[in-house]
Image 1: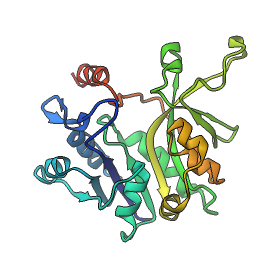
Image 2 (image 1 turned 120 degrees about the horizontal axis):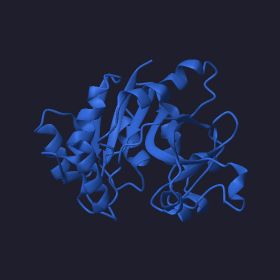
Image 3 (image 1 turned 90 degrees about the horizontal axis):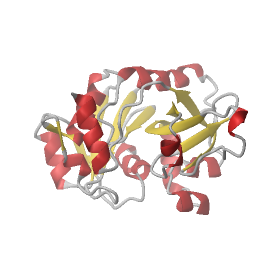
Image 4 (image 1 turned 90 degrees about the vertical axis):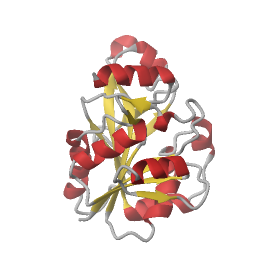
Length: 242
């Protein structure tokens, strides 16, 4: 089974423009993410896929591999699907460019899902981490996920799910971490499936898979890290890096 990683990287981000080129302990966020992904030693190849000359040069000038995407894309999945169309591989792992704390243990757990899936019922796998802080549970920048008893995703939302009408019921809340492992054919399917209204409303791309009946296996991890969505996240990342 040939496994590669693609890191989609846009320069312009709505909440924090240019965030991937911000300094994190002497290196850019995107270079930290790339190096962390390579360091897992789980992939035959790791590429950054970008629409930005600045990010492309940042990776290549530091000895990494980068691909310029040819078109504008609505999502990271669309961007890497274009790049991977002619690449020989079975599994494609999408690591978000703003995940400099990417580590081996969690990625290994996600990839193990496919080794056990002999009937190829799983289209993609992803990570979730339990959260207990109510500010984070209510934060729309934190994407939450609920799963069935076999840890298949039921729904993703920026709202608190399940809604805590009875806080004594013992519900657990999970944050979706932006790492996806796709079967290549499922990723290519994504690009030809039109966006539906639920994905358009929530602005969460993996909802598209659920709307078209694809199966997403969620894997729980205890490793939190920091995704850099805002300037405040960058400051937290700098403290954690120390």
